[in-house]
Length: 288
Image (tube, rainbow, N blue to C red; front, top):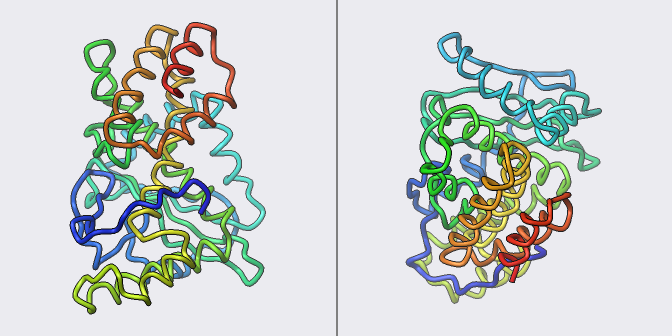
């Protein structure tokens, strides 16, 4: 995959993290929070649109998150793209199980490689909690801004929604290749768990070559790409350039410390949006 970090795969890396920063064993590999073997399950909806499945007890807070998300051009663009999509039914639901996290999965493609079904699951408490910095350099950086502005509540929830929408973008753009990569990742993890966690197994090396990286590397790549939408949303949503500069500095510190592979996605966002000169100067420093 373009931009995929070719890091050494070691047994100590045999764990990933979900959007709540919780560890899960790689032998039960999840892409976007779902077991890879379940990603092809069909959904019941038949008409392309966004379908919101929200339990009554969570509808009030969900509407606040949604209003915050749609208060930006980034949020409206992402929402409209899938609410008027020619082939895709996107389910958005709120779950008690994920708490402060979120996930995207239950993908299904047609024979032509068009994504026809996907589900974004939002934890019922996504308006609180900051995820692990190594995979989420943007969302985790918001914690450092608390002294300047309260980033809990609907803004944090909307930023997590933007992150999840980008996972749908990736699955849609990737088509059959994305599906095949998921299936190979599942095969990799199954083999890895039965061969005594030997990373130099020729069969694993061959699968990694075909996939474009190990499952951990692919997970990191996808999460970092999804962080770009959260960053777009936040740069648009922050009220003034002072907060935007503080935000970018916070992302820089996180990126330099634990998320070096976010450098390229970060630079792409900076180059694609219209930043004021003071904010751009900070962004250029970050890019270096």
